[in-house]
Amino acid sequence: MTAKHEAALTTAMVALTVTTGMVEAVSFLTLGPVFTAVQTGNTLFLGFAVAGAGGFSAVASTASLVGFAAGALLGARLGSGIDVRGRQWFVVALVAESVLLGIAGLVAWEIERLDEPLSSRHYAVAALVALAMGMRSVTTLRASVADLPTTRVTRAMTALFGASPLGLDTKIPSGAGAELRRAASVGAMFAGGLLGAWMLHEAVRPPVVLLVTAACVMAIALGFGFVPRRRAPQPG
Image 1 (cartoon, helix red, strand yellow):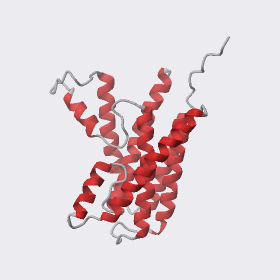
Image 2 (spheres, rainbow, N blue to C red; image 1 turned 60 degrees about the vertical axis):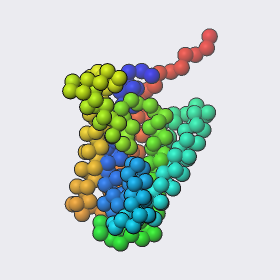
Image 3 (cartoon, helix red, strand yellow; image 1 turned 135 degrees about the vertical axis):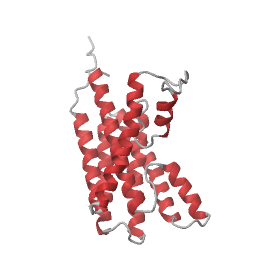
Image 4 (cartoon, helix red, strand yellow; image 1 turned 90 degrees about the vertical axis):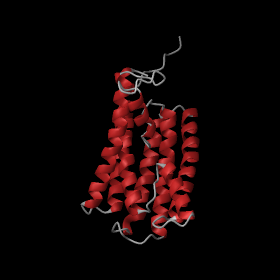
């Protein structure tokens, strides 16, 4: 991988982290509360709901968990299949994710407000968005960009502080590049959540926020697709 291609991949991962924050703003504030990317929180929400805690929906959490699992399976099969065919799997995976988010936005079109009672439409949208985020998580694992998982920031935040001059943990890789990626990961998630919540607060309808997010993911995919890759050496 050339330096230019590596820098483009890192930039794409930071931008994808922003879109995760936007998606979770819609999910938490409109569809549940439920998470569609951060399945640790969603698993806890399901436990709370089963225990009878008020304000949580077992159906919404289950829809998200099932959708995410299906997305992870689909993403793994898609990525492996594209590898076999010698195509640019990262771009294709992001295009597929964007299409799923766009479909979720269309399915959500009748959802008008943040305070609507949950319905089968809300659950379907949660499952579709989680399906896209399950694919995203596989894409992240396959891309293997250190400190930029795009769907969570706990590990990046831990490493950011643990390897800092205050933490001085010698077991955590340090260096300006690593610290910059970790800070970018945390900042991008915050920025995405802030942007998504601000749009909803300003009366942008939830389906529109999802469609905007889908367009952002598509733009990231197409932008990365135009970055030239190093050609494989020709035989003889």
